Length: 107
Image 1 (tube, rainbow, N blue to C red):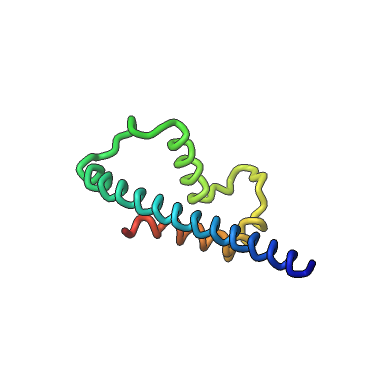
Image 2: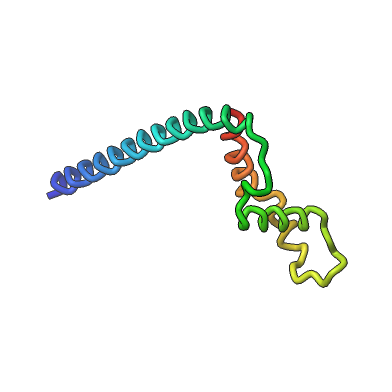
């Protein structure tokens, strides 16, 4: 009876680790494919100069919001308090996000 439980547990663990290895291989292959595409696209993008027509309305809105936050316009009544911003300044999530963002650009 105990041996049957151990046998089922070992089979279950083996299947889980096998699936994890398959996912690891799939993610690695997708990252390699993405890097090859980005290398090919980077050579084409360097010759082009971006114009305002190349950006979507959503990208322009995001850029405007970012610029307004960077300028720190405190003259108007601000509904956001500065406390949550200071809480996330030293956040591990922010640091990992920045590392992930710049990791793809350096290759």
